Image (cartoon, rainbow, N blue to C red; front, side, top):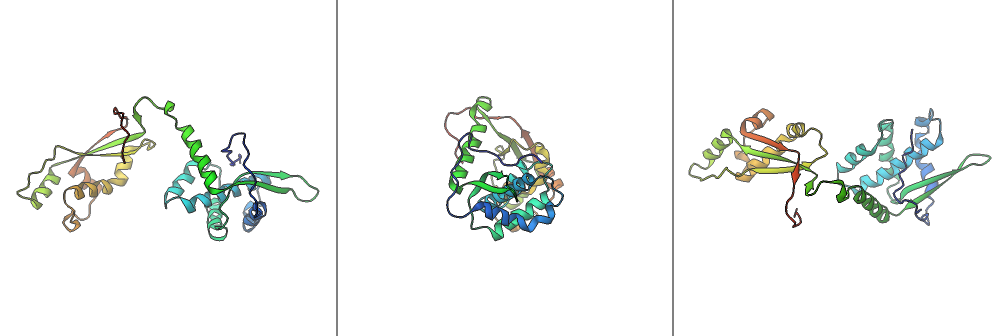
Length: 249
């Protein structure tokens, strides 16, 4: 197992936190999982996985539900025991939730008995600030073509079944269906068509709500096949903003 402790601070080492001994806390945190590490050859691997679980637990208490799992999945390496990691994260949240400092480094000092563990921590706000600056540096403007936006565009156009449904609700209505809705999603999606297939009802309901807000009149048992019959979908994976004004969201 390779090192999982990521240094976000370059050559600058954060000050060791005062007060609570986080090295002792980390050892207490590891103890319930001793049997899980019985076959682990190097104690450093145990420490590094525990630190990852500790920090992920802190992040999970900060991020909105769902985003934390996505963040964890995006950085965890293939050789990590995900089940063990998740159990450790759950323990961090339930038993150690009051200790919000992040662990950013550690050292094992050899001794005649057992190695002595020391850790370096960073207060939550300082850690998150450093992480944000690190991410901003990774995604500098120089990484992109001029005016490129890191989004894919999904363009949804109503077809005749949708028009028939709308005409049935508003027989005398003058519906301008020349305009269409455009939805932006992350360009990190490797298969946008699959994204549409998985999220079709989210698009379906947005289209319905745009014309008629009474859900009782919406078609029931909406399926992906029905979505394809009601709407034409076009996908653009290259989106550019040619204006100088900032995009408002």
